Length: 499
Length: 126
Image (tube, rainbow over all chains, first blue to last red; front, side, top):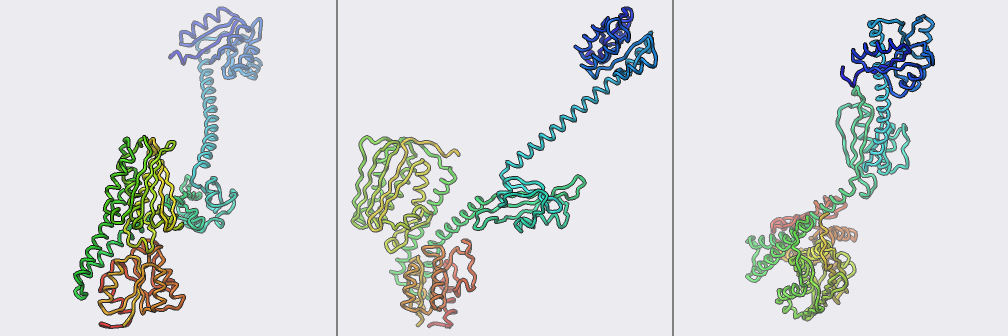
């Protein structure tokens, strides 16, 4: 017998010969045996260790066998006790069993009689232990179920999607706080008919299952505007809840808030439309001119031809610039621009830009001044981006300037920022135009701007670059007087693109 | 000789369209924004109005058309459109959009002349 599974037996008997003989006999069969020579020792042993079986003599000089058994059973109720008695009688047997003995064994007994009783007793002991184990497991399982249920509730209540379960009769049986919020209810009464209170589209989704008792495992979805003006749009999905036998128990509805998604979708399609429109305009203009050239019924003078060719060229240049600007914006949006962060000396970036525009500056006879504080600290930035930023701003200050106007560039350091002010004496902006300044494709349209070409994307790019360095911009403008841009760039570069 | 007003913020479109129409003998007046457009229509009472749908705002051409109709200016209107459909403004010819024809940019001279003639009920050269 495997030692760990050897039945442990306690023998309590005042007869020394019986104790020793029985012990030897049982040990020979693989039992683990301990003995006590009186009731007192028997109680002591039997209540400190749990024995599988105990053979207790009924008549002992100090304590009565039944009393010893009672004491042991008080501590270890699962120990199986056999009462041994030399005065076997019905009465003693019944009494012993009444007080918890498994059986009794008349003395003297043969080894066969003993083994038979012990085998029966041990089976009983195994049954008791098995039963106890099952009981314990069942209790644990019940606890687990209760725990699982509360955990499930916690999970359901914490998900951001709304969840509503209705039974076959259209009565609410389960919901979470998000569902309450989405549906705009103060409360949902459990087991109360709810379909008439729901948005008709959601009720329809539920009725798809309830009316047909469809038991197919499929779902229905639809987008439902729960609050007008796109304030709350949900994607509602209904699925059947089935009984174990496959019949319909109810319907579960999940409400996913897609308001933000719809907003982005709307903005995206608006942007795409704007882009298409802006791209189509120069194409339409050039197309129109080409059609004039090819239409033999419309006579054109050489001068007209040159003019139209020239203007087609200008429109195509603009188109090309716009496509490049769009690509820049797209790269910035996707944050695929790898900034090459280096020490950047701002005045030595701005001076070459002004050189680049010398022809335009001379054409309008604009005077340009650059003032920079001495020992200006260097920026940590990507040289190309800083250059693109100021190219856009300086180009604007020239394009929108008046003849004989001026541009003043002033660079100073203040706290953690390098501040660049670009002030022009141009046509300025009205407050309404100023408000739309950073919108893609916005260009102030009036008599003064009608001959100025531009993509409407320059300042949009400027803003994106400034934002990517956690910088800020200030714009002051007065219609017909001029505009001043102040660009604040932090001296230290902190990478905030790793979202 | 029929008089036509063209209102479009794109000077190149204005030029090309004007040239096409003047070459066929029409008298053309032009404007580059809705306000000027309204003014020239009031001043010169054209027989036909060509109107771009999207000028300063995505739909100001449309509002200008409504304004004309409200003020009983009943000259036929041809509306130039570019991407109005994808902007969600699905214009159809009904009482809400009081125009007679749509022409999608880019515009070919033949198409323009055909629509103009149809609306002016004229055949052949004027």
